[in-house]
View (cartoon, rainbow, N blue to C red):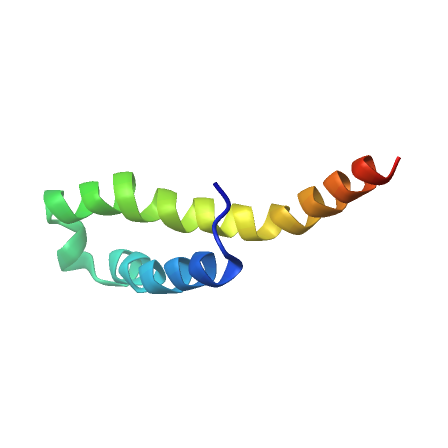
Length: 69
């Protein structure tokens, strides 16, 4: 399954404010449900989308060079 770059970018951008709220709003860090949501949901989504956007061009170049040979 290949997700579009636009979808990954929008997912990354949409979840980033939640991470910002976690970092800068100390009352939210005291809420156990919010902390769990960020630790087990939001952060993995942001990190995963960022890594895929970072690594995908390299993987595409590698796959295309392997198909040429």
